[in-house]
Length: 345
Image (cartoon, rainbow, N blue to C red; front, side, top):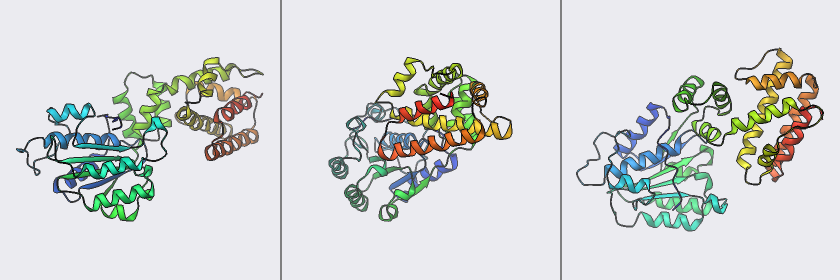
């Protein structure tokens, strides 16, 4: 079984949580699709719900109509088995990132189907979590549909979906569908302040500006130290005069073959920097959440670029990154070329 991302920190609207828990309690539908953008807390919520149900129904004394509270999980055998990724009544279906699988292997989907027909081991419920529906082939989706149609009693299937358009109508008809929205900025700022009180105000600005109201994306940016790398890049670009003065450590990170995720972050961040620079040239003021170091670099940029030149750089950068995404070109070269252009090289 693949390793779980068992993170208890998620912020999903309380009303939506109540609707999902009411559905589970009433058994209106034993298959649930939780849709919404990546990083919106869908997986952590469904993992916690799975853990709660497995612990709640470990013995026969619990009644299905008892109140459900995810903040009151029983610390029994199921609790520790789930945390150790060894609970026999739980099945986690996802692709193997280490093997670079494009889709969830169909043999794993077959295991998912047979899982529900095994006898209960510890809990009195069986739960499978699919992460995500986008990673299923057509054949796998058909097997999933067959399982949903024949789901045994006291069994649950929870499905993560990043975009409802990817759900077939037949699967959708067998499930209760709920949608998680991005957090509004005010709420998102409160969450960042609560979860990460140790980070600087500048890093908070950076995280809020680049996370798009998604807690999961914020966690990735912080855990991968993206702000620290970006600050180093800004410092080096500010001091570049006639030549690109990027630190060797930065070049090594950017050129590393296993940094695809980081390059995607830098694509978004540099794109945002170019927009901030264009805005300043046009309006003679800074956009909200412009970092102090960005302001310093923008002053350097506008000494070397006029609005038309910067707009052309912005268009070329986005066009080249779009091509790189579609035909798998080297994004690091595009980033470095953009840095050179910003420095007037």
